[in-house]
Length: 184
Image (tube, rainbow, N blue to C red; front, top):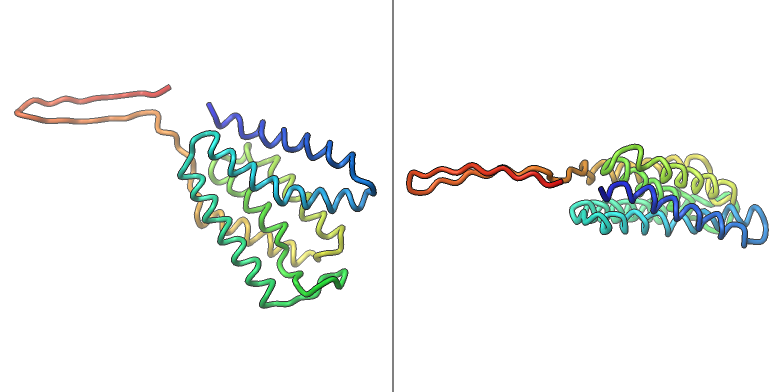
């Protein structure tokens, strides 16, 4: 029942994203700022969705996956010291925007199914494009960022299974009872 609210939340985010883009000044700035907005909004929306459907196990899996993604990403950024294409600093490899957004999208995919992750993958892909367009990363930075994000989700995320049935058995003083409960 609550799983159907996940695409609605992503759609609402997308509408807010489009409205925000219309308020920004120049097109290339719009793309870069949009990627920055998605970097924050997609993980927040994903985590909020787990709370909305009361999926505490999923919330914990998401947090563990996100922590691993950020640790690997920033550990590599600090140790590799690859210069950005715009020469602004030496933290190009891998793309943190890409790893974070692809972690959120792949979490939705692994936990709730592919159909729920399609909008999130589209937003993650757009974010990766925005980083190349802003000359902050090259294709290798983006590729490795996506691999880190997707890989961390695969390590921690299991499929969501709402328990609908419960079977119980009880025995006491040569009396036996069998119970069956089905939750709609």
